[in-house]
Image (cartoon, rainbow, N blue to C red; front, side, top):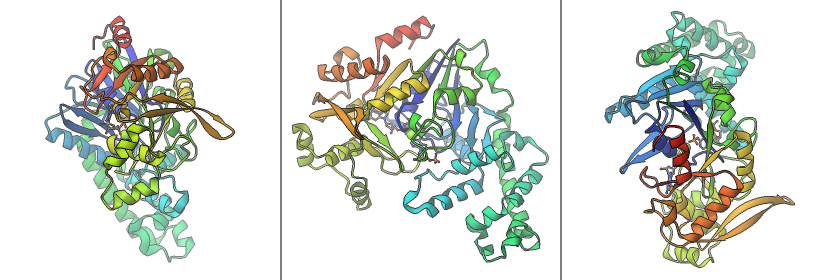
Length: 470
Ligand code: GDP
Ligand code: IMO
Ligand code: MG
């Protein structure tokens, strides 16, 4: 059996979905291990676009088992919708959902939004999918519901106990309870008559909605997903990471991070696959870098406010003068960053927000190699750099300033190239540098479509040695 994990090397949206979809063609199992529908993974096949948030990116192959692992935080209503949308277009994936995964509840979404609104300029810029509050509930252990609870005859009692326990938070933060905000604090902390009716009604409604979702999900609930991922009948198990290394709660750019692990060790935990059972870990990186939401970004180019203004007025386009300046090497940082947004279509899959863009940060990428134990890398969106006269890579921070290595751009389209040899010499030079600094390159992606991909000979041979032909 060969087990490969694919994880995000920087701040998410590196193109994991595309890479996982290509590999999934040969996989027996594709498994998500952490995160929730804060993730947005895009697959483009023959011009058709699919966006997955909770479903693993193996869902387009009828024979593949798709696992939603133990470390996930699952909004079951969002999952039902995502599955229905996929079935509407003719796909009926095989699913296994870990009973140990946690449920993101309606109130978690409300708390996420209220918390962000209360933070003002200090907000994290979350996806508002309730991930932080659901993780909080998991870790305090007293306010959490798991997928296993959908099978319980006492679902209402469980929901109701939690709803009464979190009454103070509901009154402060849930819009449905705003009418109770003037009550004396003692009534809120100890919800008696004043709140009893509304809390019970809310718990009934929430439990009812969960029961409806459970009708769809029940057949897929699995108490032992490790039996699926660890079966001796599997030839190829693929673990699909969500988010990126530096959004990890522990090793990421705290506090501007997500609330679940995003690295390969996190996938091990979320999938119940011990580190010694993982054969390879592939880190996906863009040829540049993006980030959505708040937080550090040493190599950032975009003037986010200016771009938001242009987006608001519906005129975010590159004029011919700006494109000429990119080619001549006279463009300002903001023009280069804007070009990355426009050509790379850097708008969030989950929230539609404009992504902040900048140069590849090698210093972080090296740390990603260490944290994840990367044995391979994939470089995506090389085509986005095709028009640039000069390309930079941030190599190290000196006196709090980033030092850059500069590369000459290749100034020709890579979109239709399908093998390594055909790449322009200057692109080869750029890629060789990344490979030498990080890990061998398995994929170079030159466009959103699955077909717009170069698979290196090195990686093909490696897979072949493991009995997989791609
Ligand atoms: P993920 O979260 O890591 O799966 O990445 P997303 O799907 O959120 O974002 C990646 C975006 O880049 C998607 O819109 C992809 O269709 C697109 N994409 C992936 N690879 C390439 C590429 O090589 N070139 C271009 N132009 N777009 C790409
Ligand atoms: P994929 O899997 C990019 C970011 C949010 C925010 C921070 C916390 O598509 O790469 P959260 O809602 O998780 O509490 O938000 O994390 N974030 C992502 N950014 N890609 C993602 O997933 C992300 N998931 C969360 O923008 O900065
Ligand atoms: Mg994404």
